[in-house]
Length: 158
Ligand code: CA2
Image (cartoon, rainbow, N blue to C red; front, side, top):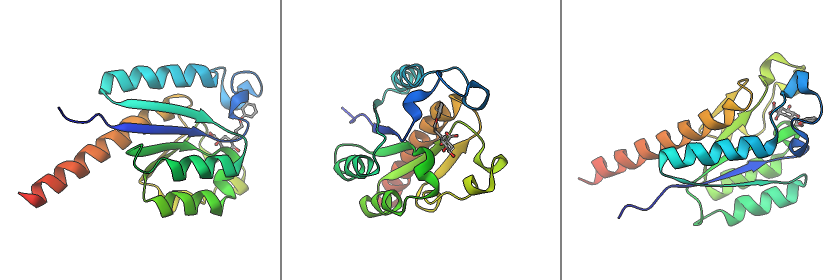
């Protein structure tokens, strides 16, 4: 039987506050709601997702490093570390994990300091600005990308 695709979903600093503060910017959906909806999307896609959140950059770096061999891809909302963290960028690049960056808000439509993402250049792509749906669409896009890449490899070998 074909092995199921496994995706690690990482959330960075302060995202545990979702739904409790700044609803005008980030909406009323909680992180638990987002994780439940990702589990539902995963069931529909026939894949496995595991969701984790940390406020600590080093913890996120460790999880990315440990994901090699255990997961096929990464969906990441690094929160404010998006704009600052060379360590997270290096972790994604160093592991070679296929990653999709997601954001609730459209970072390009906000303050200029949010316009730059340190992670974007080492990710397959980004989904931003669609609230909680960014996660579900990011997950679907990444799974589609992984399957197409695998199909390309099969074609190359045959
Ligand atoms: O739009 C996104 O998903 C962000 O990654 C959210 C980060 C922000 O620093 C990025 O520029 C864009 C902020 C996450 C903190 O979330 C909160 C939620 C509720 C209340 C306070 C913070």
